[in-house]
Image 1 (cartoon, rainbow, N blue to C red):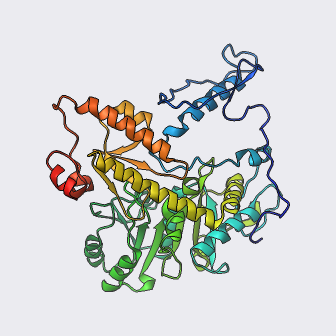
Image 2: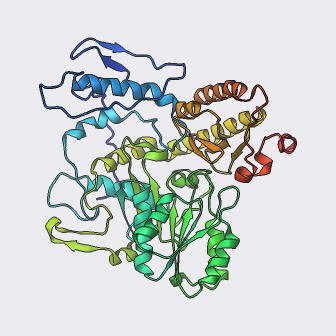
Length: 465
């Protein structure tokens, strides 16, 4: 099993799944005329709970199954242009080409590098995907082990578990701005956990890390390095962390580093390659449904082959060894990932990265000129702004909010037209929220820094900056 690519004469054909119409079409009645829908250019309302139930065949007095599904698809289609607050790339058009695969049950149970005793798996596609990431993160193919996961959380759970098995007495260190799955791992594995302070931009506070490493000098360190924090897109500096470990007297056999690169793992390598197994790191994980894009959650986890023996167990029932978290694994996602990687290529990723970074700067600059508190970290596509006052506005644009902050994640599917629509809507609503002067925009200096805050108190400094 090796790298896979398209045959020269391969031309994807558009296939409409049986029973359902393509997006943008709706069925009028059970088998009525299909009518083309136009995606609304005006803000749509958030979808409501469908309050569905499972009914016996022939006893359903409501809409048909197909009609229910088509109405649901129509609702999602109308909301695509308002999905700007969460890291999901919904810009892919290969679903129709891969739809015929849904008629097969594909299970990649066990080790990806060992064939199943049945034919209904996609491990050859999976290994091709893993090889691509091994090359990207600079580890020889005979030196790594990995698998396609169900998402970034599983990757974090696996990477930290590898560290725990290598260093059973190790203490887990992670920034307070790390993904919540890191603390979940500490709880699940009953590990000692040190929560490291974060700087105002979301990056790890290295002085606090150093203090806690020295405080726990007798025990090994398992460190979660965040390559793009969940809310602010901050990047922990791997080189500074390695130097801190050295300064504190930790040798390489006394620490393990897991890199959580869920979103930025496919951004950073095309700007400034700081994710590399040439440095003493133990594992890297990404989410496949984020920057790359996939219709179902998935991810990639890669570690050093020499580490995996501590987890591998022979399972006679499946005639394989298994070192994964989940056991049975979705065999469709490796094919979707392989297809996307092959179709886009590294040049395609470079274009996506540049466009997203440029659009993030564009959004930040426009908000700043409008007098709105905003922050954008270097090498980040996450624009943090003051939290909109109206819950309906937040819900309409599907924003993620923490305290007095909200953020927009400028993914490949988000165009400047979408950003302009968001800005126009925000400015119009702010006039209503703050028109009488009784209520002022929130001060977010403690969240994103005084230099990025445009509240009445910090406004002069903000304008000068």
